[in-house]
Length: 91
Image (tube, rainbow, N blue to C red; front, top):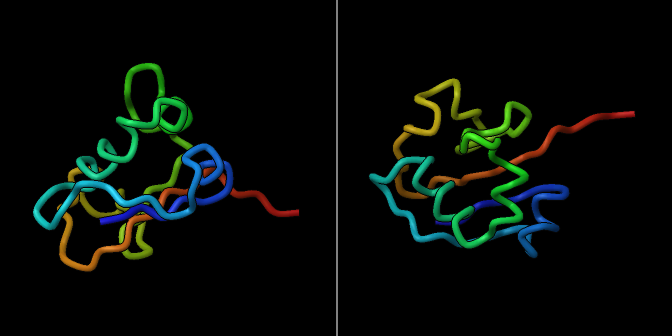
C-alpha cells in the first residue's frame, strides 16, 4: 500500500508517493500510523499535540474523504489509493 502526498507534505516526507507496510484488512488509520511513525516531522504537521488528525488535513481513500465513511477506522481493500492533502487555497 502507498500514500500519495501533496504540497508541503510531500516535501516533508521527501517524496510524493510513499509505500507503507499496510494491507487489505488493516484500517486507514493503520496505514497512516505506518506513514507517520518513521517521519516525526510529518507526524507533527499532520497530528495535533494529542495525537489526533489536524482538522485541516484531508485523508482520502480512492478519492473520497474517509470521514464520509468510517473515518480512520475505514478498512483497506485491495487496490485502494490513499492520499493526504494539506489545506488548499486558490487565488
